[in-house]
Image (tube, rainbow, N blue to C red; front, side, top):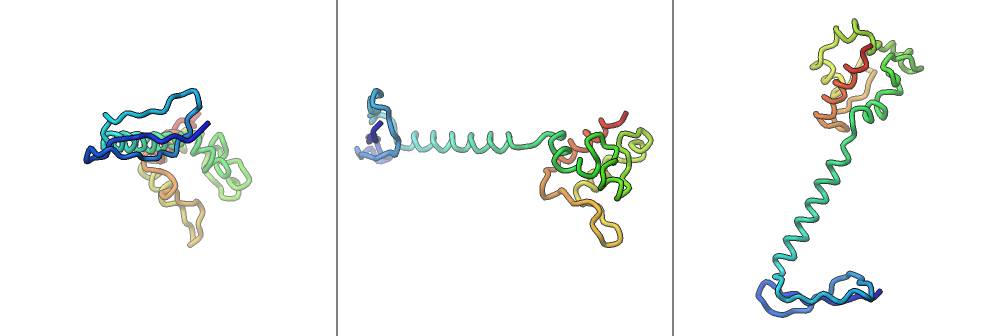
Length: 149
């Protein structure tokens, strides 16, 4: 493999050799195409970079099940029954119980997940508004609703 120099046309249509830090395999001929305007090259590179950033950030959004597993199971348990060591200590509600779910309102659950729970000045549950998006919190509420048996 060897480094190559590609000749591109600048915005002012002056021929100008620009070294591009790309390594080309020896069997691929060097690309020299002065008919491609530099603005087209720049806008294409910018567009591809922007597309990559947008798709990469979108693919990092966790599913409700992943958020439940990562943030909630330590206390609430995988099944939502709250029968973990921490859940028993905090006397958590059984989210799989239909009667408990009936008493819970979606808006209250969203507020609780977003702002956390404080009792007597102590944090009982961490706030997740800085870690989860509004859509992720709504999806988490829907996930909790599906725990009902």
